[in-house]
Length: 174
Image 1: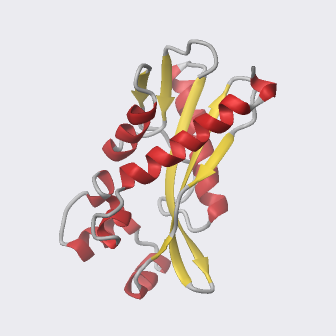
Image 2 (image 1 turned 135 degrees about the vertical axis):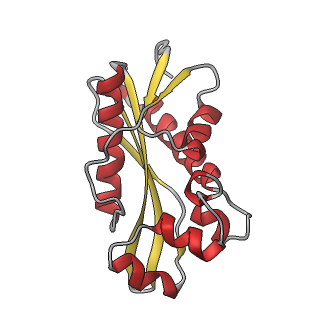
């Protein structure tokens, strides 16, 4: 990263997301904090999911009083092809606009639509579907729905790499 930031605040304590950030920031201390996304418990659009990631980055940065905050947020997006899983991240540094990046998308099973639209969270639904507990803290819905070919940690690691890569290219933040 630019300069020698000695700590980065992460706006979640979810183990899969923490591991993703640690995979990218191998020599930097990560302070994982449980902060509010200030959006719905189950974000239901790209806009809401991005907003949640930005809010988590900002809230973690402020709470930890550090130069950089990162927020990672999962959500769903309604499309003509049904509901898709989406994941977004935000990196917020002092005196810079938030940097955002999104991950891959896959369709959710049709049987998830009614429960999601009635207000249930994907984490609860995927636990029942997979007959497991805490899927969101491990392989994630993406891991279950791809038969283990892709994990939640992998998706968020790629998002964090995209955040860092963009941040390093911002001339206005140097």
